[in-house]
Every structure is written in C-alpha cells, then in structure tokens.
Length: 406
Image 1 (cartoon, rainbow, N blue to C red):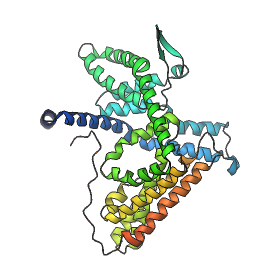
Image 2: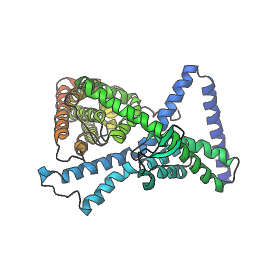
Image 3: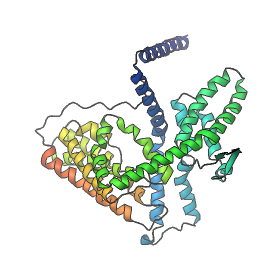
Image 4: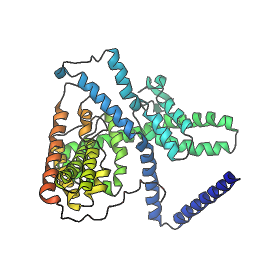
C-alpha cells in the first residue's frame, strides 16, 4: 500500500515537472527557444562526456607513463615490443579505442534512451572488421561514394546516434513487438551513422580540431595569454562545459591538444594562489581548507580552491588569473602540446608523446609554463592578494551544468 502511494505521488511530481517545463517553453521568445536548444545540446554533450573524463585522464596518464618507461634517456626500461608493454598499452588505450561505446552509453542515459542498445551501435562502429575497411568505399551509387572512416577515438557521431536510438526506439515500440525493436534500431541507426551522419560529422570534427590547432599555432603567445587569463572566469559561470567536448575532439582527431596544454596552467595557478593563503594565514580552519584546495587543484580539480577560498577573497582569484595568463603565455609562445586529458602538476605524463618517447620538448615547456603559473600567483597572493585582516565575502554558488533541470 505504501509503495502504491509513493508511486502515485512520484507520478504526480513527474507530471507537475513536465507541465512546468512545457509552460516555461511556451513562454520563451524565438531567441529563447534557440538558446534553450543550444543549452540542451551542450547539456547532452557534457552529460555524455562528464562520466568518462576521469577514465580518459587515467588512460592518458598510463600512456604517458609508458612513454617514460620506453625513453632512451631512462635506459628504455621497457621494450615497446614486450608483452608487458602490450598489456599496459592496451589498458591505457582501450578507453580511447572503445570511446564510441562509452559515449553512446552515457549519452543514452542523458537522453533517457536505451544505454545498452546504444552501446551496441558504438560496437558496430569500432568492430575490427569495419575498422580494417578504413578509407575504403562501403557503397557507391552513381557518382556518390560512401567511405568508411575510423570511428575509434570519436565522440560526436555517437552522440547523434544516441539521439536517433532514443527517438527510433520509442517509435518502433509503438508499432512492433519489443523482440523486434533491437533488430530494427541497430540496423537503421547503424546504417544511417555509417553511410551518412558518421562521415559528415567526422569531417566536421576534424575540421574543427585542425582549425583550432591552426589558430593556436598562429596566434601563439597571444592565445596563451588570453585563454590562460580568462578560462577560470568561464569556470565560475559554468561556461567551461562547452570547452570540454572541444578538448576531447582535439585529442580524438589529432592525438594531442595545444588548447589543453594552456588550460592545464589555469588549474596550477589557482592552486598556487590558494597555497599562498594556506601558508600566510594564521586561521586554522582557513589554513586547512586552503591546503586541501591547493592539493586538489594540483591534482586537476579546482572547484574546492575556487569556491572554498579564492572567490571569497577576490584578490586571491585575480592572482590566480594573473598566474594562469603568465603560464598560458609561456605555453602558447613555445607551442606547448598535450597528449592526454589529465592536467595540472599531476598530469605531467600527458606531455610526453607516446609515439616519440625520446622527445622531451613538450615536457620542458610544461615544466616552464607550470613553474611560471605557480610562482606568479603565489607571490602576488603573498604580497597583495591576502592578509588575515581581510573579510571573506559570500561564496559563489557552483553553477549548474548546461541542460540540467532547474
């Protein structure tokens, strides 16, 4: 009886939510509808990527460590042809190779579709038999050619496929028995993705990745200065979620990211600023909170530092911005490159090129830019950014991810 009452109330709550959302959408202006649609799109993309960023970072670090173990400078402790290397390399690379399956699963959950069925579509795209056909024609109709492209490491084709699965599944279930639903959905969505949407999206994704790479290389220090100086401002307003899929696409399309190398310095700078607070303050609670925030930021997670301390003392946050601008300037000036997702000091292995382990140029650029991003905000905070006579302002609330219910 209690369960029935709970179910009834849950149904009423869900209906009320649907009515509220429908009413809000009806009151939107034309520009409001465009903004809402874009917000939902970013929400789906980030909702698909957020759950797997951690394992992408872990895979990138493992690949970086393998690059270290094969470095001639360290005596090539591990041969690239050894069984141990192959096993460890597979562990580090599997998340990237099967990324369409993972993205399909998480995107389907965000879209309230069938995660397992969508993951199967991802499995179709990265099946070894189809991967072997990369570059070859799957179908020719007159002058039209439908080529097979490589979907390993890809992201955006599966997000659209997840949307197609969610829509088609509802339609098919309305007309056919459930036993036929997977058959129809797999066949139709796989065909649409392989022959039409997949190649088109891969082409656009590669164009985006190489376009960003071209702009960053051409603008050099200026892009590093501006991106480094303002990225954490995007973070406090939640606008950085739109950058995440761009970085993921960079790595997927080119195997590296100049943009992520710049963003890495912004994490370090905010950590260095809050570390200065931890050292300077005599307030026990603030000291403990600041040390925790610094450790977290140096491990690639800046939220505890930003929302716990830096934004309460605005000068500390500004000191962090000055440091990340300086670090980004160095990274952009020397074209620092990054081959994984894990940033900040803990992500040093991501600056080693797995294909060229003897090349340490990007590692030295990382060390130089990160050192600048540490020293500048630390000194600025000690001298100007903080003292114990300052009164903490109100903490800024952490913004919602795009596309989440309000």
